[in-house]
Length: 351
Image (tube, rainbow, N blue to C red; front, side, top):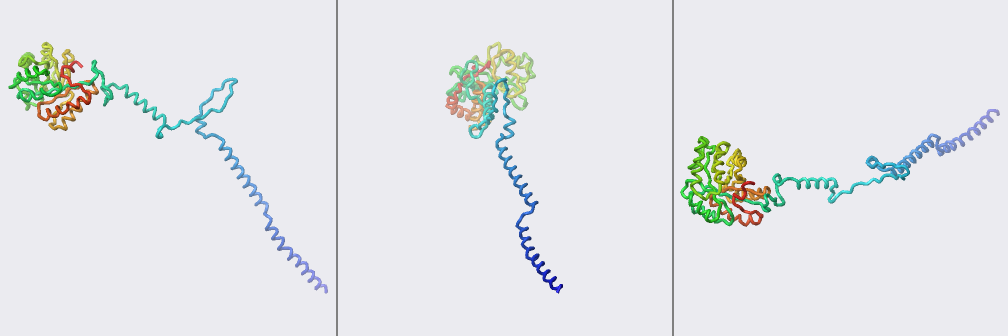
């Protein structure tokens, strides 16, 4: 008996425990533990802090605005207010105003550059009282043909005819040009660097004595009374000798004639010596017909016109070729269109 009661009692007791055990476990599963609750609280606090600082940061101006903000001087009793930060608006087509200011400064600088160093002159420079650019064209090597000389003398603008001495028609050409109102120069032969080139009769040589040079120049000038001035034929060697050129120029000075340096070599000292001796002078800027084609001659004419516009005056030298005559005749309208005044060589000396 006693054992049975114990068994019943044990079942009864164990049954109670078995019934109440699963319910308690389920209740524990439904209820979160303390560490989990703490983690949730921390997460909510961290999220709230992030939202707060994000909102506050939006109220502050950017860092670069603060750095570039102008300082406001404080005066006693004056009310201070935060400085106003302004940004420069972009110019037209996205250009910054500083870029436009730089462009204006460059334009202002170009306006002050002298006409002699400016590649192109938008306005015509005034030199020695002349409002229009002046261009003189000298045609060398006349003497063998009177007929050819007459054709060049018929051009519809001033042309200077330069005549070689001691040629078949030298004197007649000089007289014809003078009677037609054309300027006439003596095309004085001088020694070239190339010994194979014959400069022609009456040429001046560096081997001559001062007396011989003076006699030769005088003889060439005496072939016509109509010479207004002189330019050199060849002379790439002779014109480099300052002493020899001084003798030549002294004869011209005595006769009140001007000198045009043909610049057959860049080292020529002819025009420099003339300026030093106060002999009226000018030097050649362009050769028109080194290349005998209409296109090349037109290009040289345009170059001469451009130099005249920039410097106020220019001198071009050509030769009595048929293509040169045709191209010059066709250029008469071009000179008028460009506003260039065609003048004899004498009008340019002394510039």
